[in-house]
Image (cartoon, rainbow over all chains, first blue to last red; front, side):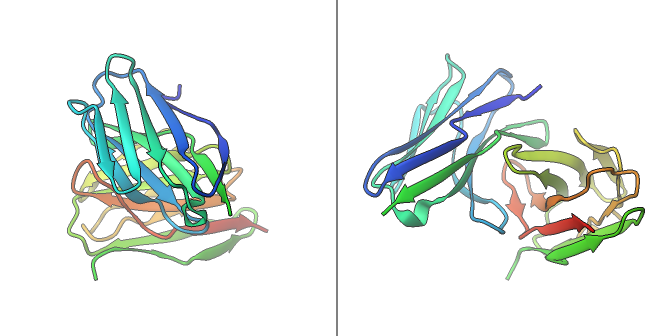
Length: 110
Length: 110
């Protein structure tokens, strides 16, 4: 049973466009929600994270929107660049470990 | 520089062989984790350890074994009982609600 469901599986966006990746969860005990960015052949790296008492967090071109009642959160990448092309994972924390989404492969076309 | 070192970067295993993947961290994190990554399946938890000399099975522990004799080290052994070991293996450490990942080991059965 996958505790964090992520969509879409892949995404193609034109340079300068907005990339949006969505995640949904069921377990209301989750209390921390990060997004990780992974380039080919590398380990994932923390991109941005949010706590459930906040509805939005922005860091540069990256924004997390969090809807606690709907149990959904999303990553928005504004002004997407070819260098943003990577795989993105959402995650949720509970009881000493993260539960990860299945990943979204983003391709930003120049 | 603090971080996690995984070695080797590439590893080839013959049928019936046991192989050990190394993971070392100098971040002074108590918790360490092993994940397996397959295309389109995200990150699946194999084993994790919250403290020295203690570890717990994750979602896909069958065919794997670990030890945690030192805080800095959390080696993973892929045994011959693991029938489909070809994958990208990621080690992570955590002080809590944040993972630092290594660069991964790509294991291939030949």
